[in-house]
Every structure is written in C-alpha cells, then in structure tokens.
Length: 441
Picture 1 (cartoon, rainbow, N blue to C red):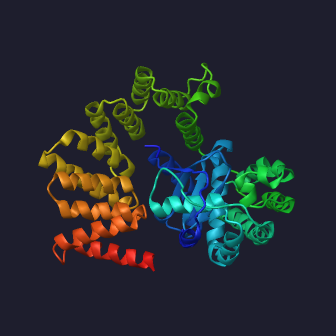
Picture 2: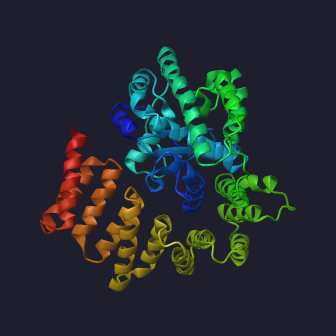
Picture 3: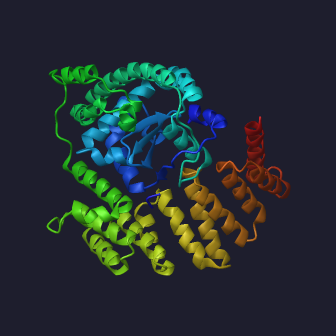
C-alpha cells in the first residue's frame, strides 16, 4: 500500500554504497498531491498524467526533479509543511526547473560534480528507479571535492532564482496564492547559518539566499497576486496525508502527536495505522472498521483493511476488502497488485482463478511497467497456468528492472525460443535482448 535521463547515465560509474532511502508508493497520497498540483501542471502546459510524483521515505527536507518529469518529494519535507500551499509552491518551483530547461543546461555542471563529489542522495534514488527496486536506493557516493561542490552550487543558485520566478508566475496563472513559497523558505532560512554538513538536503541542493526571499516578498506585494484561500477539502486532505505518513513511518509518535481529545478523522486514521504497524490486531481492525463506517465509499480504507488482514495472516478475509477497494477505484494499479497477490495465494491450480489473476496483473502493468512485484506475480501465475514461456518473459522483465543482466538474458532467450515468432511476447523478448546489448555496450 505505502510502498533519470542524467542519473541513469551516472549509475555506470557509481560503486560506493550510501544510506538507503525507501521509495513509497501510495495511491491515495499520489492522487491527493496530483489533484493539488494539476492547476500548476496546466499553467506550465504539462499533461498531469505525464508527471510522476515519487515519495521518498526519508526525514530529510528535500525535493528535486530528475529525468524529465519525475518529481521527488521526501517525507521529511511534507512533514514540515503547514498547508497544501507550501507543497504546491515547492512543486511549482520544481516545475520551474523543467520549464527553464535546467535539466539540460545543468547537465554539464552536475556531471562535473559527480566526477569529483557525487551527491549520494540523488544517485541513490536514481539507482532505485533504474533497478525498479521499491525498497531501497543501492548505489552512490559522496565525499569529495569542495571546489567541485562550489562550482556546482554556483550554477545551481542561478537556476533557483529562475525557478522561483517561474513558480510565482505559474501559481499566479493558476489563480493560486503563492504565499506558500515564502513561508516554506522562511522555515529553512535559519539553516544557512549552520555548517554545510548540518543543513537540510533541500538547502544544500537548492541554495537559499536572502535575495531570493526578498525578491519573493516583493513579488507578493503586487496587486495582481491571488490570495484566495485553498479549499477546505484540501486542508483536510493535507491532514490525512501527514497522518498516514506518521502512522506508517513513526507509529510510536502517533500517541503524542494526536492527544485523546483529538477525534478528527485524520487522528483516527493515524491511530488505526499505528495499531496495525505495532501488531495490535484487534484494535487496528476495530479502528479501520469505524473509519469505513464513516466513509463507506473511501477505497483507501478498504485497501488498508485488506493490507491489515493479509499481514495478520487472514488472506481469505482480505480479498473482499481489496475487491471493494478496486471496485471503487478501478484504475488504481497499486491496489490491483496486492489484490492479485491475495487471490494467487488462494487460487492453487484453479485455471479460471489464475486467468482472472493474470488479467488483474496485465491491467496493473499497463500503468506500472516498472513494478517488479507485478512482473514476479505474473510470472508465478503464468507458471501455475502452464504458460511457461510467458512466465519466463516476465522473469526477464523483473531481472531487467533489477539490472540482473545475466539472468534477464537467460530468461528472455528462453521465452523467445518458445514463443511464436510473430507474437507480441516474442517481440518484447527481442526488445529486452536488444536493451541488454545496449547496457552491455
């Protein structure tokens, strides 16, 4: 449930491990953020469906763009925001880098820093995406040359001021109050006085200067700046996002973050998740049932109950909850995948059930082609269904995403040898083999 062009090139030369960050996939949070950000996407002439919002489980305050329209938000950044406006302003700023072409013009500067002083966090994330591993970032290096760092950040400061202006413009065009850009940066201003190794990742990768804040303050005084309040629904969603994250990431903090007098839905959501994470089985199920009673058509409450039941060893009971969730949210691939997993545990050799599981997973992969879990499950379902060549094809897909090159080549070749030469599966097997040749070169 709670689960780049340049970076991929850099991975070839990286070998020193860094501390891992987990990639979080959560349909509810991704959809909420996308809803808030859509006016900004449109103001930048971007198709919202083409922008990938990626959450990173890390206490650092950071966000960045890499690989085109992949925008990374660290959970630590979300945690310090007070309202949707601050997150929207950060997104507008990051889109300013895309609109300004900084990902292209900044490539040489970043490459230079990477040779002399690799920015470990970014490289680690690039590895996680390249491998398709949802659990961790596995490669990167830091430590190096302060001259290279100064050269990189001098270039970056110019980009930051430009992205600020783009953020102000796009928020104004979208009719959204850009005050959040100022309040967010004010949260970070005190860090400028700290030694570089104690500053947040956001300050280090988005150099902050007094002139930037002064420029933003001056722009906010203009009469054409929107100042309408954000919808009450967005404020509630912001509370739910923060509640969900603290419940999953820091369940022990929930009791003091939400006192007993707080009976808001967000507080009870956090408590239900915290009980689940701390294996308080009956308390967790009682709390999620109460939430479902409040909002029976909320797919994410049914999804959470399904996840709880699976993890509590009650797989058969979990299936109706997942089915209800996907019935309410049919396009949610990240709900369809665990539903298929639960069904697979109950299917045994039933061909009718296996065909239904295969259908679920094929639909999910159309939206989430980088999901190693979906490819592994599909390989298992095809194998149990006697379709060994297709099973081998998806094992090749999984291995390719994980950069297990030798295994990917073996499985793709087996699939190609067994599949009809003009079939879509054989075409894909040839594509995988060609990609592996490119990687080797």
